Length: 173
Image (cartoon, rainbow, N blue to C red):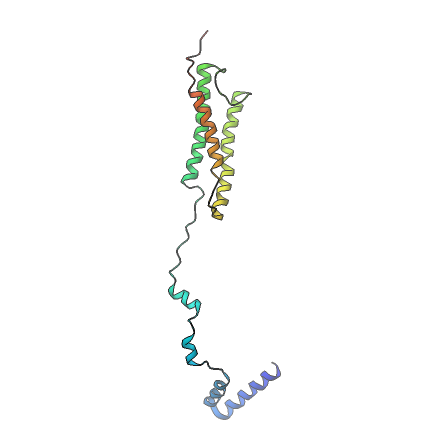
């Protein structure tokens, strides 16, 4: 205890002993500054109390799902067009031979079509990661849909090109 505090404590103890509890209370009350009642009425209420009184109860925050309807639709569309492109290429090759069909590249047929399916499956990952980041940051203009939409458009083009082939059945020699 510092010297001024010790003196104040000793004075309080002496006052209690000499005059009783009532006299000590008057001594303590005399040292506490009291605000003027007129200024209390002119001051605005405390902002924290005002918020508590007027605020609505907090609403639960809805967490946006990453696997929402749009994401699942575009992913399913991308996978579906990839499978449909493989089916139409296979049917076109079966009906017309290798020549007139749009395969999408050179090399062994099974390797190309396997690569098409792997690419479709792989493009789901960056789309998912970008959508998660955009949903957390609440970005207004989102571009997560570019990967599955481009893949779906590319495979749709291949599918339509091969489905339109009308060369008749393959000649059987």
